[in-house]
Length: 142
Image 1 (cartoon, rainbow, N blue to C red):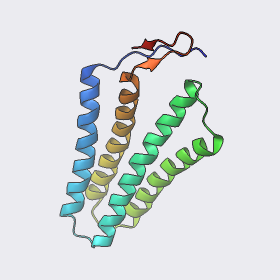
Image 2 (cartoon, one colour):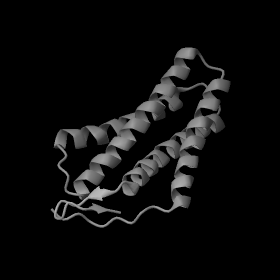
Image 3 (tube, rainbow, N blue to C red):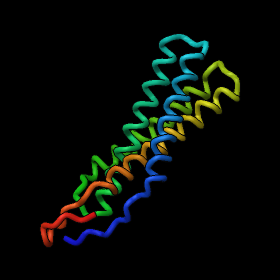
């Protein structure tokens, strides 16, 4: 099986991805810490963030595996997409019904989007930076 040659991510892109990931997660959690809401509401939003991060990374991995010819079951592929969309839907429903200002809702939505996007970028960079073993020659690439 022939693998496509992937370009190594630059150090600047790797650093920017990690900074964006930490900025999104930290901002979201600082917002929760300072929010005037019940602890169970804070737990809901925190859980939705963690679920979304895991689901987004899972989608990136399954899509990338398919592109590289690595077998991915249809059920896992579908569940990855379903989980990601469900996490976004849960955040949307939570914010829609929340008793907070529109600017607070926008803050949570944007820090959530930044976190999910940067988690995908970090996972992509991690995968691209890892040396691959070519099956045709048994040699390490990259």
